[in-house]
Amino acid sequence: MTHRYGRLAAVAVVALVTTWAPSGVRSYAVADAAPTLSDLRGVDELKTLFNQDAGKIRLVLLVSPT
Amino acid sequence: MQTELLQKYPKANLRVYAVWFNMMPNDSRAKWPPSLLTDSRVTHRWDEPKAVGTWYGLRTASIRPQLTPDSKWGEADVLWDAFLLYGPNARWDEAPTDLVHWGRTIVAGRETLKADFEKLFAAKK
Image (cartoon, rainbow over all chains, first blue to last red; front, side, top):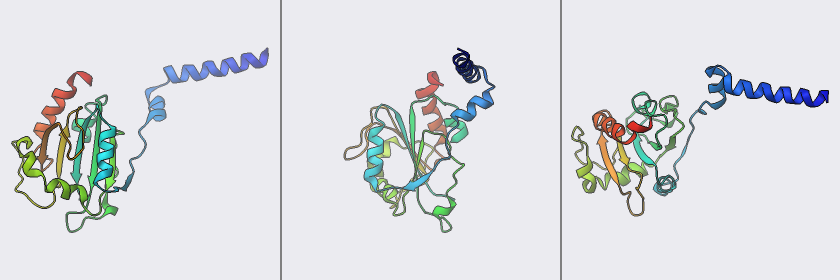
């Protein structure tokens, strides 16, 4: 009985933290991962990515590092 | 781009494909700026042979009507420092359809891009 109430209490604490925690704490949990750069495998890869995102607005940027 | 557009419309149903390649004499992959576009809706790819820029460079005449009025493009082998904005119904078979606008340079065309974003996403901030 005591053990079950201990687990319930732990669940309750987690629920409280995720709903009422300061935004800084919650934003850490959902922060964007750092972007990565991988090699493009030809125009066909961009075409595949493009078509996989059907239904979305899509923006192609052609850029140089400097 | 990051602050004026992506952060302004965090809930916009948008995908960005940033295709990077060397164009200036001192460019290199090592100089890619990872902190420039950190929004999770952005996909970054390095295009060493400039395949995508070359592909578009060959086709700019066909998309000239969608060039923003503040852009400058005089035809060259490789299209770079440019953006191309496509609508939700776009599909890429031989070429991508539903082009809204494209601009070159990105800075020169940004006012049109901002106006397009406002029209597309204003209700979905």
